[in-house]
Amino acid sequence: MITRELFIRLGVIQKRNWMAFLIVCVCTTISVLYEFLEWFVYTASG
Image 1 (cartoon, helix red, strand yellow):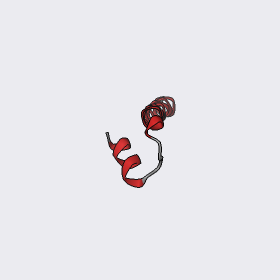
Image 2 (tube, rainbow, N blue to C red; image 1 turned 135 degrees about the vertical axis):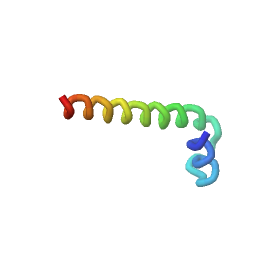
Image 3 (tube, rainbow, N blue to C red; image 1 turned 90 degrees about the horizontal axis):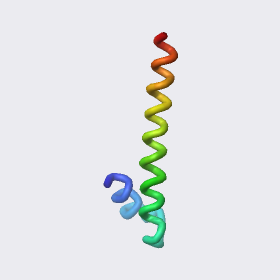
Image 4 (cartoon, helix red, strand yellow; image 1 turned 90 degrees about the vertical axis):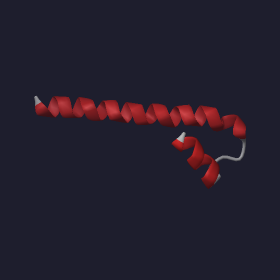
């Protein structure tokens, strides 16, 4: 929801056709980054 609102308010994309795809890409990227953070903390702490 936040990503969609930011895309609309900031006018990141002009065509709505790409909206759903880009939102899924951003959410997946955030999830992957969080998983990498968890993995790094796990390996750093032993």
